[in-house]
Image (cartoon, rainbow, N blue to C red; front, side, top):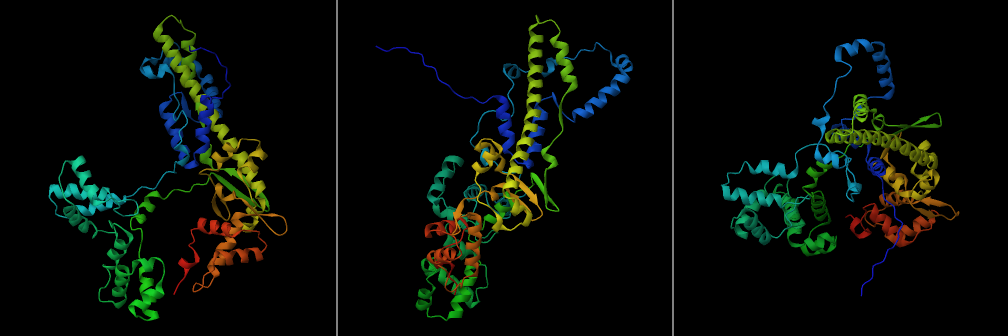
Length: 485
């Protein structure tokens, strides 16, 4: 027999004001203006301007008060019924209420331009295709990924066209149109794998050039050996000179393995607007917020007066009650938004001041070696805030210094022990690791084990697996793949 029981539990729930603040805190300055414009559009009780200017205007209006009343009438009533919507009465929702796991991945505003697919569709327009071929070709272009490849099997694209366009086709017909698209710019577009991509680009070069001919043969017949950099095997099988294979490999490595990336990089390039400006005034570091971080907002005076008028009126009328509720919700939301903006500014400055103080030597000199190991908890402890708050400030924010613009994440790094017993920033170790690799003999590149010994000789206590991890984070391949002829 089932039993009913009561159980008490303690839990935390974010208030609308806290949600508002969290949303505003994590967006960069480039998005803030858009966010403010959105709120101004949906909330008539919120206006641009400062409270100080409002006070000046109020004094002026009091001086000429009698004249204004004669002109407009002191008992003029505003019909708020035009503003009322059923969904607003149920409960005013702020823009972006509620947690959204995708918000942390939001990017800054992007520069406009033609996308890769738009560029390809434009070129498709120059082909004299019938309606059926046009449908198939557009489906093929839609199947091209951001790197410029058609990685979906042609058999599956046949099914896609049948289901989505109700057009029956064959792999052969699709392949015929695919070859036409592969003639489009950029060279190598619509390839099905890297080998085909490189061959498409080589085919556009001078076919009478011996180096081009050799490059095509290497990609066609010895692609596996090429990818593994077994150049000695290729040279032996083809019985060619050192110079011949060197020129051929050089030609191949200058080809573009991601022909679609050029367009997408242009589309995805972001405005890097600094949220902070740091100036060095004779050894004194002065920190300022970007002026765009401090929009001037105020509560609409006319809306506040409207609320006072209707609040003092009779509460028996149902429509009037709804009007009062609506106006109050808009006023409260406007006050919450203004307060959240102010709190955002204070939190940003407080956090950045702590970062500047922690990394003072770097901001004075601009030398990476002066960077100290610093994690989110270090700053959170200093400003007595939660780690998640510091994380939101560091995300997508940047500071302008006399040495350039740096994302705040740049200053956070782990520590590596040194022989002297102090901790060195992992960024400092990566910097030295990169210098060692750049200075190595490319004919005999340094292995991770040799790099480990060189770093230890410089006083850094580091394991080989850590060297490998840092090398991968720097997008540097293993020694075998760094080898040059």
